[in-house]
Length: 335
Image 1: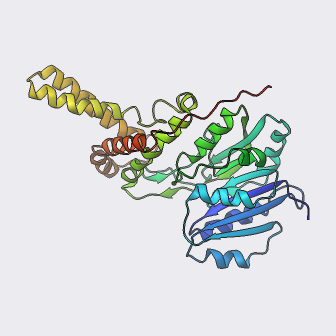
Image 2: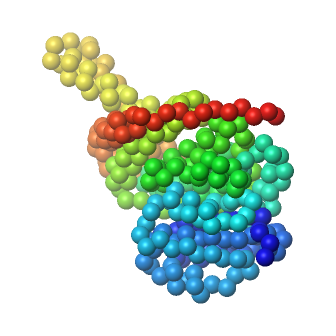
Protein backbone atom coordinates (compact mmCIF):
# COMPACT_ATOMS: atom_id res chain seq x y z
CA UNK A 1 0.00 0.00 0.00
CA UNK A 2 1.51 3.32 -1.09
CA UNK A 3 2.00 6.05 1.46
CA UNK A 4 -0.41 9.01 1.33
CA UNK A 5 1.01 12.46 0.68
CA UNK A 6 -0.88 14.07 3.60
CA UNK A 7 -1.29 12.79 7.15
CA UNK A 8 -3.80 14.78 9.18
CA UNK A 9 -3.23 14.59 12.94
CA UNK A 10 -6.05 15.45 15.33
CA UNK A 11 -5.63 15.23 19.12
CA UNK A 12 -8.91 15.09 21.01
CA UNK A 13 -10.16 14.94 24.56
CA UNK A 14 -13.89 14.52 25.32
CA UNK A 15 -15.16 16.21 22.15
CA UNK A 16 -16.92 13.39 20.35
CA UNK A 17 -19.68 15.51 18.75
CA UNK A 18 -17.23 18.13 17.48
CA UNK A 19 -14.79 15.44 16.34
CA UNK A 20 -17.53 13.96 14.18
CA UNK A 21 -17.92 17.32 12.40
CA UNK A 22 -14.22 17.70 11.59
CA UNK A 23 -13.95 14.12 10.29
CA UNK A 24 -17.06 14.63 8.14
CA UNK A 25 -15.53 17.81 6.70
CA UNK A 26 -12.29 15.97 5.88
CA UNK A 27 -14.34 13.47 3.88
CA UNK A 28 -15.39 16.37 1.63
CA UNK A 29 -11.85 17.51 0.82
CA UNK A 30 -10.97 18.02 -2.82
CA UNK A 31 -8.06 15.77 -3.78
CA UNK A 32 -7.04 12.46 -5.19
CA UNK A 33 -8.15 9.17 -3.68
CA UNK A 34 -5.51 7.71 -1.40
CA UNK A 35 -3.78 11.08 -0.92
CA UNK A 36 -5.00 11.39 2.66
CA UNK A 37 -4.77 9.54 5.95
CA UNK A 38 -6.22 10.77 9.24
CA UNK A 39 -4.74 9.96 12.65
CA UNK A 40 -6.87 10.73 15.70
CA UNK A 41 -5.08 10.67 19.04
CA UNK A 42 -7.70 10.06 21.71
CA UNK A 43 -6.00 11.71 24.65
CA UNK A 44 -7.72 10.03 27.59
CA UNK A 45 -11.37 10.67 26.60
CA UNK A 46 -14.18 9.07 28.59
CA UNK A 47 -17.21 10.53 26.76
CA UNK A 48 -17.72 7.72 24.22
CA UNK A 49 -15.20 9.05 21.69
CA UNK A 50 -13.65 5.59 21.29
CA UNK A 51 -16.97 3.93 20.46
CA UNK A 52 -17.89 6.63 17.93
CA UNK A 53 -14.54 6.27 16.19
CA UNK A 54 -14.84 2.48 16.05
CA UNK A 55 -18.19 2.86 14.28
CA UNK A 56 -16.97 5.23 11.55
CA UNK A 57 -16.59 4.14 7.94
CA UNK A 58 -14.76 6.81 5.95
CA UNK A 59 -13.37 7.16 2.45
CA UNK A 60 -9.94 7.94 3.91
CA UNK A 61 -7.70 5.73 6.01
CA UNK A 62 -8.45 6.41 9.68
CA UNK A 63 -6.03 5.40 12.41
CA UNK A 64 -6.94 5.84 16.08
CA UNK A 65 -4.31 6.00 18.82
CA UNK A 66 -5.45 5.98 22.43
CA UNK A 67 -3.81 7.32 25.58
CA UNK A 68 -5.13 5.89 28.83
CA UNK A 69 -4.78 9.32 30.42
CA UNK A 70 -4.30 12.77 29.00
CA UNK A 71 -0.70 13.54 28.05
CA UNK A 72 -1.38 17.06 26.77
CA UNK A 73 -1.73 18.42 23.22
CA UNK A 74 1.99 18.59 22.36
CA UNK A 75 2.60 14.98 23.37
CA UNK A 76 -0.57 13.82 21.58
CA UNK A 77 0.45 15.53 18.34
CA UNK A 78 3.93 14.06 18.56
CA UNK A 79 2.51 10.58 18.99
CA UNK A 80 0.31 11.06 15.94
CA UNK A 81 3.26 12.35 13.91
CA UNK A 82 5.36 9.29 14.79
CA UNK A 83 2.63 7.05 13.37
CA UNK A 84 2.12 9.14 10.22
CA UNK A 85 3.24 7.92 6.79
CA UNK A 86 2.65 11.10 4.79
CA UNK A 87 5.22 13.47 3.33
CA UNK A 88 3.22 16.37 4.78
CA UNK A 89 1.71 16.55 8.27
CA UNK A 90 -1.50 18.54 8.66
CA UNK A 91 -2.43 19.53 12.21
CA UNK A 92 -6.01 20.29 13.20
CA UNK A 93 -7.89 20.72 16.45
CA UNK A 94 -10.83 18.43 17.07
CA UNK A 95 -13.33 21.30 17.14
CA UNK A 96 -12.75 22.84 13.69
CA UNK A 97 -14.37 22.37 10.29
CA UNK A 98 -12.19 22.48 7.17
CA UNK A 99 -13.29 23.83 3.80
CA UNK A 100 -13.05 21.53 0.73
CA UNK A 101 -10.04 23.47 -0.64
CA UNK A 102 -8.06 23.21 2.59
CA UNK A 103 -5.42 20.77 1.35
CA UNK A 104 -5.57 21.52 -2.38
CA UNK A 105 -4.82 25.20 -1.79
CA UNK A 106 -1.93 24.54 0.61
CA UNK A 107 -0.21 21.74 -1.33
CA UNK A 108 1.42 23.88 -4.10
CA UNK A 109 3.43 25.84 -1.54
CA UNK A 110 5.45 22.70 -0.81
CA UNK A 111 6.84 22.73 -4.36
CA UNK A 112 9.27 25.32 -2.98
CA UNK A 113 11.94 23.44 -0.97
CA UNK A 114 12.45 26.50 1.25
CA UNK A 115 8.86 26.19 2.50
CA UNK A 116 8.69 23.88 5.51
CA UNK A 117 5.21 24.86 6.66
CA UNK A 118 1.94 26.41 5.56
CA UNK A 119 -0.51 28.03 7.95
CA UNK A 120 -4.11 28.49 6.92
CA UNK A 121 -6.77 31.05 7.69
CA UNK A 122 -8.72 30.39 10.89
CA UNK A 123 -11.99 32.17 11.54
CA UNK A 124 -15.24 31.91 13.47
CA UNK A 125 -18.29 30.59 11.61
CA UNK A 126 -20.17 33.33 9.75
CA UNK A 127 -23.25 32.72 11.89
CA UNK A 128 -21.37 33.25 15.15
CA UNK A 129 -22.64 36.01 17.47
CA UNK A 130 -20.37 38.83 18.53
CA UNK A 131 -18.16 37.42 21.31
CA UNK A 132 -18.30 38.59 24.91
CA UNK A 133 -15.15 39.35 26.96
CA UNK A 134 -15.27 35.76 28.25
CA UNK A 135 -15.61 34.07 24.85
CA UNK A 136 -12.76 31.82 23.73
CA UNK A 137 -11.85 33.10 20.26
CA UNK A 138 -9.26 31.48 17.98
CA UNK A 139 -8.47 33.40 14.79
CA UNK A 140 -5.64 33.83 12.28
CA UNK A 141 -6.62 36.16 9.45
CA UNK A 142 -3.21 37.31 8.17
CA UNK A 143 -0.72 34.67 9.23
CA UNK A 144 2.17 34.79 11.65
CA UNK A 145 0.28 33.10 14.49
CA UNK A 146 1.29 29.53 13.56
CA UNK A 147 -1.79 28.01 15.21
CA UNK A 148 -1.71 24.23 15.51
CA UNK A 149 -5.45 24.14 14.87
CA UNK A 150 -4.66 24.79 11.17
CA UNK A 151 -1.11 24.27 9.95
CA UNK A 152 0.95 21.95 7.74
CA UNK A 153 4.61 20.94 8.11
CA UNK A 154 6.96 18.79 6.10
CA UNK A 155 7.31 15.48 7.90
CA UNK A 156 11.08 15.45 7.36
CA UNK A 157 11.50 18.87 9.01
CA UNK A 158 9.12 17.98 11.83
CA UNK A 159 11.10 14.88 12.75
CA UNK A 160 14.46 16.62 12.26
CA UNK A 161 13.37 19.14 14.90
CA UNK A 162 11.97 16.34 17.12
CA UNK A 163 8.41 17.65 17.07
CA UNK A 164 6.68 19.84 19.61
CA UNK A 165 8.49 20.54 22.86
CA UNK A 166 6.49 18.59 25.45
CA UNK A 167 7.60 20.91 28.22
CA UNK A 168 4.77 23.12 26.95
CA UNK A 169 2.19 20.99 28.71
CA UNK A 170 -0.78 23.24 27.99
CA UNK A 171 -2.14 24.42 24.65
CA UNK A 172 -0.08 27.59 24.89
CA UNK A 173 3.14 28.64 23.13
CA UNK A 174 4.02 25.15 21.84
CA UNK A 175 2.86 26.25 18.37
CA UNK A 176 5.01 29.40 18.34
CA UNK A 177 7.96 27.46 19.75
CA UNK A 178 7.97 24.90 16.96
CA UNK A 179 7.40 27.53 14.26
CA UNK A 180 10.30 29.58 15.64
CA UNK A 181 12.49 26.45 15.49
CA UNK A 182 11.57 26.08 11.81
CA UNK A 183 12.34 29.74 11.10
CA UNK A 184 15.62 29.53 13.06
CA UNK A 185 16.71 26.80 10.64
CA UNK A 186 16.25 29.15 7.68
CA UNK A 187 13.00 27.67 6.35
CA UNK A 188 9.90 29.66 5.47
CA UNK A 189 6.32 29.20 6.66
CA UNK A 190 3.82 30.40 4.07
CA UNK A 191 0.31 31.68 4.70
CA UNK A 192 -2.54 30.40 2.52
CA UNK A 193 -5.83 32.30 3.01
CA UNK A 194 -7.83 29.71 1.03
CA UNK A 195 -6.88 26.93 3.46
CA UNK A 196 -9.74 27.83 5.75
CA UNK A 197 -10.94 26.25 8.96
CA UNK A 198 -13.84 27.46 11.03
CA UNK A 199 -13.16 27.44 14.76
CA UNK A 200 -16.29 27.69 16.92
CA UNK A 201 -16.65 30.20 19.70
CA UNK A 202 -16.92 28.87 23.24
CA UNK A 203 -18.24 30.89 26.14
CA UNK A 204 -15.75 30.57 28.98
CA UNK A 205 -16.23 30.88 32.70
CA UNK A 206 -16.00 34.29 34.28
CA UNK A 207 -12.71 33.46 35.95
CA UNK A 208 -11.00 32.53 32.68
CA UNK A 209 -8.35 35.27 32.89
CA UNK A 210 -7.41 34.31 36.42
CA UNK A 211 -6.71 30.76 35.23
CA UNK A 212 -4.88 31.92 32.11
CA UNK A 213 -2.41 33.91 34.20
CA UNK A 214 -0.52 30.63 34.71
CA UNK A 215 0.34 30.60 31.00
CA UNK A 216 3.13 32.98 31.99
CA UNK A 217 5.09 29.92 33.15
CA UNK A 218 6.09 29.10 29.57
CA UNK A 219 7.07 32.62 28.50
CA UNK A 220 10.61 32.16 29.79
CA UNK A 221 11.00 28.86 27.94
CA UNK A 222 9.92 30.41 24.64
CA UNK A 223 12.00 33.56 25.13
CA UNK A 224 15.14 31.69 26.15
CA UNK A 225 14.93 29.28 23.21
CA UNK A 226 14.23 32.00 20.62
CA UNK A 227 15.28 35.42 22.00
CA UNK A 228 15.44 37.16 18.61
CA UNK A 229 12.16 35.89 17.23
CA UNK A 230 10.46 36.42 20.57
CA UNK A 231 11.24 40.14 20.27
CA UNK A 232 10.60 40.51 16.56
CA UNK A 233 7.58 38.25 16.01
CA UNK A 234 5.48 38.87 19.10
CA UNK A 235 3.58 42.12 19.56
CA UNK A 236 5.09 44.36 22.21
CA UNK A 237 1.67 45.67 23.25
CA UNK A 238 0.08 42.36 24.24
CA UNK A 239 2.01 39.45 22.77
CA UNK A 240 4.87 38.98 25.19
CA UNK A 241 5.18 38.01 28.85
CA UNK A 242 3.21 41.02 30.09
CA UNK A 243 0.62 43.07 28.21
CA UNK A 244 1.93 46.63 28.22
CA UNK A 245 -0.95 47.83 30.42
CA UNK A 246 0.26 45.66 33.29
CA UNK A 247 3.27 47.90 33.73
CA UNK A 248 1.01 50.71 34.89
CA UNK A 249 -0.22 48.41 37.66
CA UNK A 250 3.29 47.17 38.50
CA UNK A 251 4.85 50.64 38.77
CA UNK A 252 1.80 52.57 39.92
CA UNK A 253 0.96 50.70 43.09
CA UNK A 254 4.38 50.76 44.82
CA UNK A 255 5.06 54.41 43.94
CA UNK A 256 1.56 55.36 45.06
CA UNK A 257 2.33 53.77 48.43
CA UNK A 258 5.78 55.38 48.57
CA UNK A 259 4.39 58.80 47.66
CA UNK A 260 1.75 58.50 50.36
CA UNK A 261 4.27 57.30 52.98
CA UNK A 262 6.80 60.10 52.36
CA UNK A 263 4.06 62.71 51.89
CA UNK A 264 4.78 63.54 48.25
CA UNK A 265 1.26 64.09 46.91
CA UNK A 266 2.40 64.75 43.33
CA UNK A 267 4.26 61.42 43.19
CA UNK A 268 1.29 59.64 44.76
CA UNK A 269 -1.13 61.26 42.31
CA UNK A 270 0.97 60.43 39.24
CA UNK A 271 1.45 56.86 40.45
CA UNK A 272 -2.28 56.52 41.12
CA UNK A 273 -2.99 57.75 37.59
CA UNK A 274 -0.56 55.19 36.15
CA UNK A 275 -2.13 52.44 38.26
CA UNK A 276 -5.70 53.17 37.22
CA UNK A 277 -4.75 53.72 33.58
CA UNK A 278 -3.02 50.33 33.65
CA UNK A 279 -6.08 48.75 35.20
CA UNK A 280 -8.43 50.41 32.71
CA UNK A 281 -6.20 49.47 29.78
CA UNK A 282 -6.06 45.84 30.89
CA UNK A 283 -9.85 45.66 31.06
CA UNK A 284 -10.21 47.50 27.74
CA UNK A 285 -7.84 45.05 26.03
CA UNK A 286 -10.12 42.07 26.77
CA UNK A 287 -13.32 44.00 25.98
CA UNK A 288 -12.20 45.57 22.71
CA UNK A 289 -14.45 44.61 19.77
CA UNK A 290 -16.59 42.49 22.09
CA UNK A 291 -20.17 42.69 23.28
CA UNK A 292 -19.57 44.08 26.77
CA UNK A 293 -22.21 44.79 29.40
CA UNK A 294 -21.90 46.71 32.64
CA UNK A 295 -22.02 43.43 34.58
CA UNK A 296 -18.99 42.19 32.64
CA UNK A 297 -17.01 45.28 33.66
CA UNK A 298 -18.00 44.83 37.28
CA UNK A 299 -16.64 41.27 37.14
CA UNK A 300 -13.45 42.09 35.24
CA UNK A 301 -12.26 45.23 37.09
CA UNK A 302 -11.72 43.49 40.47
CA UNK A 303 -10.07 40.50 38.77
CA UNK A 304 -7.51 42.74 37.07
CA UNK A 305 -6.44 44.06 40.44
CA UNK A 306 -5.05 40.54 40.96
CA UNK A 307 -4.33 39.13 37.49
CA UNK A 308 -1.14 41.16 36.72
CA UNK A 309 0.41 39.98 39.99
CA UNK A 310 -0.58 36.36 39.30
CA UNK A 311 0.96 36.67 35.86
CA UNK A 312 4.14 38.11 37.40
CA UNK A 313 4.35 35.17 39.79
CA UNK A 314 4.06 32.61 37.00
CA UNK A 315 6.53 34.45 34.75
CA UNK A 316 9.11 34.62 37.55
CA UNK A 317 8.51 30.98 38.37
CA UNK A 318 9.14 30.13 34.71
CA UNK A 319 12.30 32.23 34.68
CA UNK A 320 13.64 30.14 37.56
CA UNK A 321 12.43 26.81 36.20
CA UNK A 322 13.93 27.34 32.72
CA UNK A 323 16.99 29.36 33.76
CA UNK A 324 19.39 26.84 32.21
CA UNK A 325 17.71 26.73 28.78
CA UNK A 326 20.04 27.92 26.00
CA UNK A 327 19.03 29.64 22.74
CA UNK A 328 18.60 27.40 19.71
CA UNK A 329 21.19 27.76 16.97
CA UNK A 330 20.10 29.92 14.05
CA UNK A 331 20.94 28.51 10.60
CA UNK A 332 20.68 30.58 7.43
CA UNK A 333 19.99 28.46 4.38
CA UNK A 334 20.86 29.49 0.85
CA UNK A 335 17.92 30.81 -1.15
